[in-house]
Amino acid sequence: METYLLAIDIGTTSTKGLAIRPDGEILSNFQKEYPTYYTQSGSAEQDPEEVFQAVVEIITQSVQFNSGGFLAGVSFSGAMHSLLAVGKGGEPLTRLMTWADTRSAKQAEELRSTALGKTVYSQTGTPIHPMSPLCKLMWMKEEQPGLFREAYKFVSMKEYVFARLFGEYVVDYSIASASGLFDVHSLTWSSDVLRLLNIEEGKLSRPVSPYHRCSGLSSDWATRLPISRETPFIVGANDGCLAHLGCGAMSPGDLSVTIGTSGAVRMASSSYYPDQHSRIFNYRLDEHTFIAGGATNNGAVLLTWFEENIEGVKPDGAAFVDEAFSVPGSEGLIFLPFLLGERAPMYDSQAKGVFLGIRIQHKKAHFKRAILEGICFELKSIAQAVEEVIHPIGRVIASGGFVKSDRWVQLLSDILGKPIIVNSQNDASSLGAALQGFQALGIKTSMERKEELEKSFVPNEKNHQYYQKVFEIVEPLYDKLKGDFAKLSKLGPE
Image 1 (cartoon, rainbow, N blue to C red):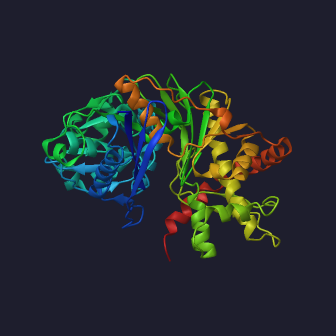
Image 2: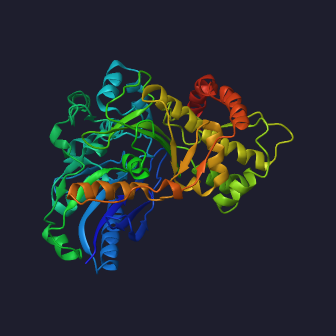
Image 3: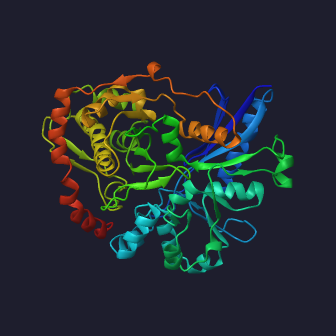
């Protein structure tokens, strides 16, 4: 029987299950989607039962499909910044607040500028922003005080899954380090944050290594899942850190850039590198490794927005890119891509999208081109902060849906002024979870990246010099407009 591991990635839009052998051969890859509910301004919630059942379905489907093999273990990746309040019996008291929930914008803004906010950032490595569980809990304490007091535990979705399957509340250092509640230096919950929230440590799960193994499924799930009761489940890490690991970007100076619905820039380090401007995160991959970087809210979601709301057509990312490159450039049209507010490097939920420099000759294709350029400029801004604080950028490894377009990747290379290697692995988080899982099980792997088989892009120097001039115009625009963004937010609807 061939040995394989099942890597489960509990994402924001779906759960994926990657069955993979130690030599890297993928045996199966299943996916189950679920909805997000937007019931009020700023809210982004999911039904934890729907997500949990998706996990169960993916495990069942994957194991049944690979019934001829030996399942060595199940390893997990989980989305960051989710929050769920549960009762003493483990029952959900709320829906799951996802990373995209920004109802705590006021609490984040108030804390960020204080001395305590700077202390929290230096301890936790998590910039103060409304997506972090810290700010979500501050909002819940103010807006839902009865529920806040009643809650037995505050957990992420991955913690909820493990509690359902094994009856214990554990959280890996990686998920914990993205919560804004965890001291990444001592690997314990921050006493300063606990005092700020006025909660006991017992309200949170027990922090454990990402290599921590749980076995002995609860009697209920031991009979319902088609696996041995003693199959080890490895708790794993957060999806962002594992995506970086899965990309193979672990050498000093390696920068991973991902553009999917949103986007991210990351770099691995053996040490914590504080940023005096609080622009970048320092999350734990495991006990020995930090993943530093920044994320943008505004990636390919902007393409969908333009097609659905401006053109009134069914979204087609490939057609969008084709039209964007039907013109030689945006011809002086600049786009600030802050339709969903922004995380790095400014962390401003009130930031707005802006088209600047519109002239009579501009057509729809120019607006599309400006959108692609605007996304790339935002990633360049984050990359500059990472390079300034962590390490000079060596090679850049790109992943995510945008790598399907050679022209978009070339555009990013021209704007960054860096060569780019494309990682064609679409499930980098799952692959990272598999690597971590095999390590936890003591199984040797031969899953080296074969870069010679992947595409590489070299910046066009003439284009880079042009985009550098444009970037010098783009970079200070946010600071010039942030006061107006705040005023517009206060106006509200007519």
